[in-house]
Amino acid sequence: MTLEVGKGVSSEKPQTRSHLLQVETRSRVEFKEITETLQKLISESGVLQGTCFVFVPHTTAAVLINENYDRGLQKDWDDFLNRLAPRDRDYHHDDGNCDSHLKAALIGNSKSLFIEHGASSWDNGRAFSCAILTGRGGAKSESRLWRIRVM
Image (cartoon, rainbow, N blue to C red; front, side, top):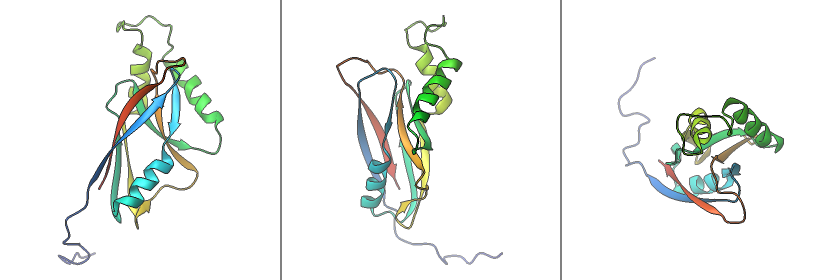
Protein backbone atom coordinates (compact mmCIF):
# COMPACT_ATOMS: atom_id res chain seq x y z
CA MET A 1 0.00 0.00 0.00
CA THR A 2 1.34 3.40 -0.93
CA LEU A 3 0.28 6.68 0.58
CA GLU A 4 -0.01 9.69 -1.66
CA VAL A 5 0.78 12.84 0.27
CA GLY A 6 -2.15 15.22 0.49
CA LYS A 7 -4.65 12.86 -1.05
CA GLY A 8 -7.75 12.42 1.06
CA VAL A 9 -6.52 14.78 3.76
CA SER A 10 -8.56 17.91 4.36
CA SER A 11 -6.67 21.17 4.67
CA GLU A 12 -9.50 22.65 6.71
CA LYS A 13 -8.87 23.29 10.39
CA PRO A 14 -10.74 20.66 12.43
CA GLN A 15 -13.75 21.89 14.41
CA THR A 16 -13.76 21.37 18.16
CA ARG A 17 -16.79 21.85 20.36
CA SER A 18 -16.64 21.65 24.14
CA HIS A 19 -19.71 21.21 26.31
CA LEU A 20 -20.52 20.90 29.98
CA LEU A 21 -23.30 18.51 30.88
CA GLN A 22 -24.99 18.85 34.24
CA VAL A 23 -26.20 15.53 35.64
CA GLU A 24 -28.60 15.55 38.60
CA THR A 25 -28.91 12.63 40.99
CA ARG A 26 -31.33 11.74 43.78
CA SER A 27 -29.78 8.54 45.15
CA ARG A 28 -26.34 7.31 46.17
CA VAL A 29 -25.88 5.14 43.07
CA GLU A 30 -27.44 6.07 39.74
CA PHE A 31 -26.82 5.25 36.12
CA LYS A 32 -28.05 8.16 33.97
CA GLU A 33 -28.24 7.49 30.25
CA ILE A 34 -26.87 10.34 28.12
CA THR A 35 -26.91 8.65 24.70
CA GLU A 36 -29.48 11.00 23.11
CA THR A 37 -27.66 14.06 24.48
CA LEU A 38 -24.37 12.88 22.96
CA GLN A 39 -26.01 12.10 19.62
CA LYS A 40 -27.53 15.60 19.57
CA LEU A 41 -24.21 17.28 20.43
CA ILE A 42 -22.43 15.31 17.71
CA SER A 43 -25.10 16.13 15.13
CA GLU A 44 -25.09 19.85 15.99
CA SER A 45 -21.29 20.07 16.04
CA GLY A 46 -20.86 19.83 12.28
CA VAL A 47 -18.01 17.35 12.76
CA LEU A 48 -18.21 14.70 10.03
CA GLN A 49 -15.20 12.57 10.96
CA GLY A 50 -13.70 12.73 14.42
CA THR A 51 -14.02 11.79 18.05
CA CYS A 52 -16.40 12.52 20.89
CA PHE A 53 -14.57 12.44 24.22
CA VAL A 54 -16.59 12.22 27.44
CA PHE A 55 -14.83 12.93 30.74
CA VAL A 56 -16.05 13.20 34.31
CA PRO A 57 -13.69 15.07 36.67
CA HIS A 58 -15.12 13.46 39.80
CA THR A 59 -13.31 10.59 41.53
CA THR A 60 -16.56 8.88 42.54
CA ALA A 61 -18.25 8.92 39.14
CA ALA A 62 -17.55 7.07 35.91
CA VAL A 63 -18.50 6.82 32.24
CA LEU A 64 -20.01 3.53 31.12
CA ILE A 65 -20.85 2.11 27.71
CA ASN A 66 -23.12 -0.93 27.70
CA GLU A 67 -26.37 -2.36 26.37
CA ASN A 68 -29.52 -0.32 26.86
CA TYR A 69 -32.37 -2.67 26.01
CA ASP A 70 -32.55 -4.31 29.46
CA ARG A 71 -32.73 -1.94 32.45
CA GLY A 72 -31.96 -4.88 34.74
CA LEU A 73 -28.34 -4.55 33.60
CA GLN A 74 -27.97 -1.38 35.69
CA LYS A 75 -28.96 -3.33 38.80
CA ASP A 76 -26.56 -6.10 37.79
CA TRP A 77 -23.76 -3.51 37.49
CA ASP A 78 -24.57 -2.17 40.95
CA ASP A 79 -24.64 -5.68 42.44
CA PHE A 80 -21.38 -6.63 40.69
CA LEU A 81 -19.58 -3.49 41.89
CA ASN A 82 -20.89 -4.00 45.44
CA ARG A 83 -19.41 -7.51 45.49
CA LEU A 84 -16.04 -6.14 44.38
CA ALA A 85 -16.04 -3.15 46.76
CA PRO A 86 -18.71 -3.40 49.47
CA ARG A 87 -19.76 -0.15 51.10
CA ASP A 88 -19.59 -1.48 54.66
CA ARG A 89 -16.02 -2.80 54.54
CA ASP A 90 -13.19 -1.25 56.58
CA TYR A 91 -10.98 0.70 54.18
CA HIS A 92 -7.76 2.62 54.82
CA HIS A 93 -9.31 5.66 53.16
CA ASP A 94 -11.84 6.60 55.82
CA ASP A 95 -14.04 9.32 54.33
CA GLY A 96 -17.04 6.98 54.11
CA ASN A 97 -17.01 6.56 50.35
CA CYS A 98 -13.86 4.61 49.56
CA ASP A 99 -16.00 1.98 47.85
CA SER A 100 -17.17 4.64 45.38
CA HIS A 101 -13.60 5.66 44.53
CA LEU A 102 -12.67 2.03 43.84
CA LYS A 103 -15.79 1.38 41.73
CA ALA A 104 -15.24 4.52 39.66
CA ALA A 105 -11.61 3.57 39.06
CA LEU A 106 -12.69 0.15 37.76
CA ILE A 107 -15.11 1.62 35.21
CA GLY A 108 -13.02 4.66 34.26
CA ASN A 109 -13.60 8.40 34.10
CA SER A 110 -13.60 8.80 30.33
CA LYS A 111 -14.63 7.20 27.06
CA SER A 112 -14.10 8.09 23.42
CA LEU A 113 -16.26 7.22 20.47
CA PHE A 114 -15.67 7.66 16.78
CA ILE A 115 -17.75 9.99 14.64
CA GLU A 116 -18.31 8.85 11.07
CA HIS A 117 -20.38 10.74 8.52
CA GLY A 118 -21.54 13.20 11.19
CA ALA A 119 -22.96 10.56 13.54
CA SER A 120 -21.73 8.35 16.35
CA SER A 121 -20.39 5.00 15.24
CA TRP A 122 -21.98 2.85 17.97
CA ASP A 123 -24.92 0.62 17.20
CA ASN A 124 -28.48 1.09 18.48
CA GLY A 125 -28.08 -1.51 21.23
CA ARG A 126 -25.47 0.55 23.09
CA ALA A 127 -25.91 3.31 25.63
CA PHE A 128 -23.62 5.88 27.16
CA SER A 129 -24.31 6.25 30.87
CA CYS A 130 -23.05 8.41 33.67
CA ALA A 131 -22.38 6.20 36.68
CA ILE A 132 -22.80 8.27 39.83
CA LEU A 133 -21.41 6.21 42.69
CA THR A 134 -21.65 8.65 45.63
CA GLY A 135 -24.79 10.69 45.19
CA ARG A 136 -26.39 12.25 48.26
CA GLY A 137 -29.53 10.17 48.22
CA GLY A 138 -32.87 11.26 49.55
CA ALA A 139 -35.11 14.05 48.33
CA LYS A 140 -32.36 16.58 47.56
CA SER A 141 -30.68 16.37 44.21
CA GLU A 142 -26.98 16.75 43.57
CA SER A 143 -25.45 18.09 40.37
CA ARG A 144 -22.27 16.91 38.71
CA LEU A 145 -20.65 18.52 35.70
CA TRP A 146 -19.35 16.34 32.89
CA ARG A 147 -17.08 17.57 30.12
CA ILE A 148 -17.76 16.56 26.54
CA ARG A 149 -15.55 17.46 23.61
CA VAL A 150 -16.50 16.80 20.01
CA MET A 151 -13.59 17.14 17.59
